[in-house]
Amino acid sequence: MPLDILVGAQWGDEGKGRITDRLSAQADIVARYSGGDNAGHSVTVGARLFKLHLIPSGILHPRTRAVLGNGMVIHPGTLLDEIGSLAAAGVDVGPQRLLLAPGAHIITPAHRALDGAEEALRGGSSLGTTGRGIGPAYTDKAARLGVRAEAMRDPPAFAEAVRRHEERLARLLESHYGCAAPDPGESARLYREYAERLRPHLAETGALLAEALAAGQTILAEGAQGTLLDLDHGTYPYVTSSSPSAAGALLGLGLGPRHVRRVIGVAKAFQTRVGAGPFPTEVHGQMSERLRGTGANPWDEFGTTTGRPRRVGWLDGVLLRYAARVNGLTDLALTKLDILSGIPTLLLCSAYRRHDRRTADLTGTPAELEGFTPDYESLDGWDADVSRLQSWESLPAGAHAYLEHVEQIAGVPIRWISVGPERDQLIVHEGAA
Ligand code: GDP
Ligand code: IMO
Ligand code: MG
Image (tube, rainbow, N blue to C red):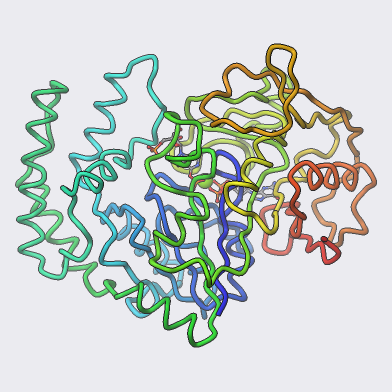
């Protein structure tokens, strides 16, 4: 009865969707547990590129069921669009396969307006949110003012709850932010339609997941965002408003810790961040263009959700070690190793320095990162194209040295090495400790 939890070990966009897709082949259920359509998970299957924002990437395997957990915030319009485009691509997204937790919270038009208004008010110190209304929706959840998915069981009553909710937020938007608010009546009408279409997907997901585990099925919890964006454990306040780290999976699905078999951390072979906040190993100039790419390839470092160029840098081993601790990682999946091919010297941050003191472990919170400078180790790179290699043994010596160094710094074995976005561009490291 195993539960495997897959988390982003950095600032998001580590390639979680791609690894989830591969691991879902062995899962009975794949469940998203936190965040909303701030996430963008790209999955390449043959000639097709799927961009998923809410629906778990496991939906692309015909025998896997997909759950949207109670820890999520759902924009019903985005969900219906995603259902529509997957259905058009021939994927079964019927109510038997795609199950929505009653406890998930609903994102409304006023949440999105508030997200934009708050960012505008912050001006130069804005967080660089995705503008999807995530923060305001979780704020209402914590304030016990939110509208939950379960209310969609009764569409007229749901519409009325949305209207009252929007009227309250309209007063806030107009008086505090001086902004025009979305029309509550129009939102209520639209959301009633959404409820009619989404209510067949509502299911008692907590009980269903527990029954699946009791019956010996395998559940893969698919994280969104990343550990360093975690509301509690990330680079606060430059974080998202949910709990993407492993503990969030239990809360966001309604399961206890005794079921957990593996906690898989997905990390890129380098480091990226989209949005504001500290980033000790960030690089600029030519090397940043080399790591980011020009945008010509679908995997170049431009946001799946917003199209923004991602900030890039060298792999931060101190933060990876921190992510290993916070999540209790049992395994690592390292993605985009192919991007490092041809770089003569690779830098790897194994410690920080502050006031002449060297520290390899982050004992405080990562919110304090601004004062640290990275202490780098230099490693020889490799020239060979690794993107079609299928085994650990066939990787060049430089790649072995790099990967072994990362394992040693993180203190976690690298069990999967991704060398390209396609399903088969994944090396399974059988001998990982
Ligand atoms: P997620 O949010 O963690 O699922 O990651 P994203 O999908 O936002 O970003 C990862 C991007 O890298 C996507 O475009 C993937 O198709 C791509 N990708 C994943 N693994 C690899 C890899 O090993 N090599 C290359 N070149 N691209 C990859
Ligand atoms: P996936 O699942 C990368 C970042 C935003 C911003 C901060 C807060 O694709 O890895 P929010 O809209 O959540 O209030 O924004 O969090 N962010 C992400 N960055 N990948 C994501 O998701 C992200 N989701 C949110 O850029 O800095
Ligand atoms: Mg992404």
